[in-house]
Length: 111
Length: 111
Image 1 (cartoon, each protein chain N blue to C red):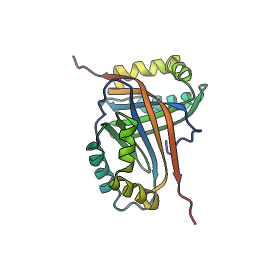
Image 2: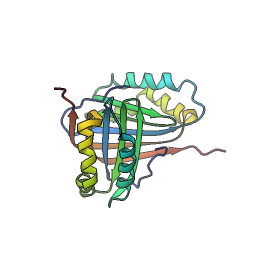
Image 3: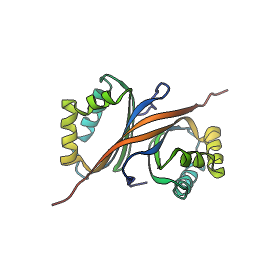
Image 4: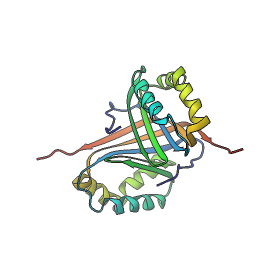
């Protein structure tokens, strides 16, 4: 992932997923890529940002409603990834669902 | 930063700062470290998570109220860092203020 998400004006929702990966993580990269791809196909998806530095990762996905988030949480392939995450890939994680209330952006304009 | 933030039950607030750093970033690391330290001293601060992978960075700070966030945004030393960020360190960034409405966590228990 090498881009920032471009989202419309608030309000909308963010799912903040922060994780500490386990030492053993065979198959993790492929699944992470697949989940980003699959999330992007879901109704109500607005964008995603994902960064990992060593064991610590932050992934934020943006959604237009709580219903969209629930749909994604219950997606059958995503549920399998969640199960594998608990069984093998993560030593620790948190999922926070938050309502984005305001935002501002900056982009450099070269002159 | 090598830890996940430990926060109390929702509701509380998150400031999601996502950035794409410029090629030139002398002094950036020291200022970033200083801002994490300084944020931690502010009233209403709950925790912070920060990860960078190449040019892309995500920093999430957690706060107990919008007033606490406004106080931090207006902190004189933080304002100077914001100015340097626009003048030199970042090609692009977004700041989103979001109200955390629900959360869940997982931690591996070795048996």
